[in-house]
Amino acid sequence: VVINSFRRGEPVINLAEVEEQDDEYLISKLLPKHRITLLFADGAAGKSLFADAVSLSLKTGLALPNGLQPTITANSLYLDWETDPDEQRQRLGWLCRGMGLKEVPAMYYMRMYQPLALEGERIKREAARVNAQLVIVDRIAAAIQENIKECDTSLRGFNALRSMGDMTHLVIAHMS
Image (cartoon, rainbow, N blue to C red; front, top):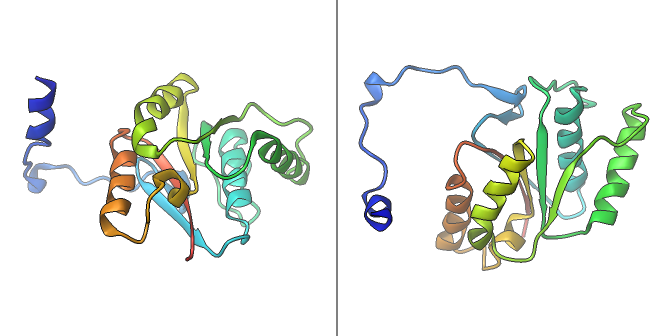
């Protein structure tokens, strides 16, 4: 039954019958809800630190330095294929002090080793457990663990994210 359901896929729908929706954002004009947002720049450009700032802004309701405002307060889950909890905690400390916070709030982090496609169910389960509205993937090439320049490889990675349901994802990528 499961295999047949999977093979059957999504049903065909008539888009004329679908009610048009205004875009919803977790952070206005930056993170559309239930979508994948790609943060793409050179290495050492501050992408991970920016992702931490986004997560902290969402958690606390404080605007980002450029004035982008969270629309809700919510938890994030940071999936890290690059660094470790000590480095992430240090960055959060810097950001909290810079934003005038006296303490680091509860922030959720998973150090990752296995490919994203193998970890999808566990990630989905943990995101639900901590009630995360945002899942940050740092960094997509390491998460896919194959040659990301190949189209099929990239599609497998992004399909793994889509298979997690109506989550909002912030995905970090390096320029090669």
